[in-house]
Length: 237
Image (tube, rainbow, N blue to C red; front, side, top):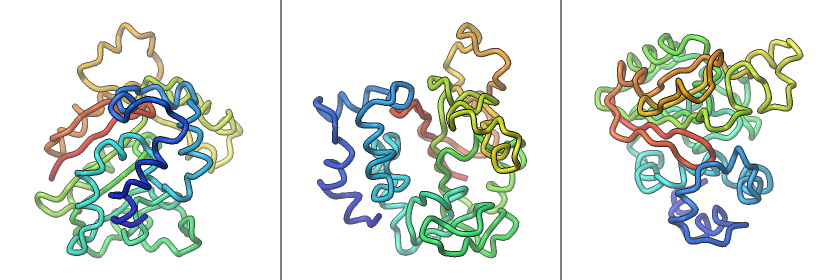
């Protein structure tokens, strides 16, 4: 996961495996995760170790914005919840896990552990696991440098197995009651405020209009539904 690779034709080729349409048409399709498309399976299973967090379609779509931030040698940022598939192996991780996917120790286990002010906070498919969103978003705002970047990719309501409290995304293993399984449960179902979700039969799934929530803490420049049934949010402190 180097800047050279992310900005290369090899990365594009890896991301476009198992599809037979132009890249712009590929990006318009958002239901990859819900339908378990061959391309989605390839990215998230066959070559996920190579791609890391860059396997997500929303990250791929906005790579021209993200790469100069994530790989900026003058920046020091954090990957919040990124122990298993970090955005970069040169970015500090904040996670409850004790090691990352290379077996390296995770130094920071909470935002309060940070001993520096990050230039950016990145998070991918993590906020849905947090009971108290306001608590963590407030901590992020406090720790992030003024004008520092807030970047988050989260699951969208459009993928049913990712709805809150179902456990379906992990084959119902989350229903076994173990501490690890309970921590893995999705606590929220995320929508954007422009969505008329009241008419979609989403009652009792703990709906959060995530752009409205995050705008209480950060200035958002990009708020968009993306492929892989996700939502991309990008802004500043």
